[in-house]
Length: 257
Image 1 (spheres, helix red, strand yellow):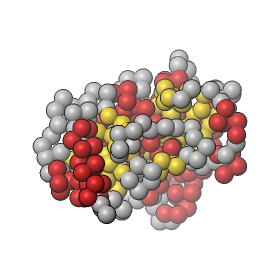
Image 2 (cartoon, helix red, strand yellow; image 1 turned 90 degrees about the vertical axis):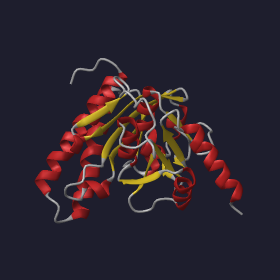
Image 3 (cartoon, helix red, strand yellow; image 1 turned 45 degrees about the horizontal axis):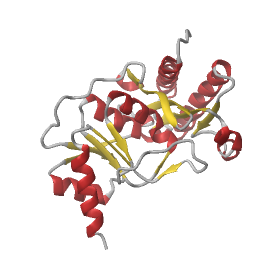
Image 4 (cartoon, rainbow, N blue to C red; image 1 turned 90 degrees about the horizontal axis):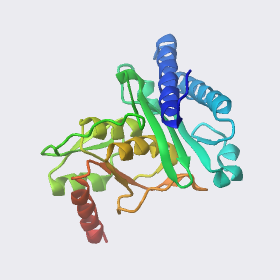
């Protein structure tokens, strides 16, 4: 693997991890979904950790599949460079035959900001990266579409879509949802059920590099490499749609007792 810079590294690692997951999926099959999920999480995590130790030995890493002790290592909070990775985002979709809405996330946080990232969508044969961010759609489609969870779409997003005339589109992993915004399959992703930093760091890095809007649902900044890696909510959208969504969310919150 030839490494030119952090953006390229993120893309290469995410892509190779995804290729390994495709091979694993084909070899193990779908009869035992739990075994396939566990094997995918483990294999991708081990590959990414080994690669980062070898290629960026001085950097810290925050991974979904790390132990709690590793995640809470105080050295991460004082490090200037931290890789935030989700080795397999969307394990449910990964374990279901025919589904392509799962991903591999690799992001780099430096001195308070995300500076590089990649989202591999292996079953879609593409990787979105900060090295070459996708070109956003020029116009907001009407009615606009909001990506939501397949299994637990927030009720307030249903209300938001109804109020603003939008449509809901169920998609699997968070990475696949944000990628769908960047590739024109939807215009926004709104989530308020909580998630972790590794669920969004890489796709947010790519979204920002592409010129999309990315924030908390109240418009405040998304922050990463925190002691507690929990993020309560997120909004990613085409930039022209963001003011409408933020205003709609504020109105809904004012009306909530």
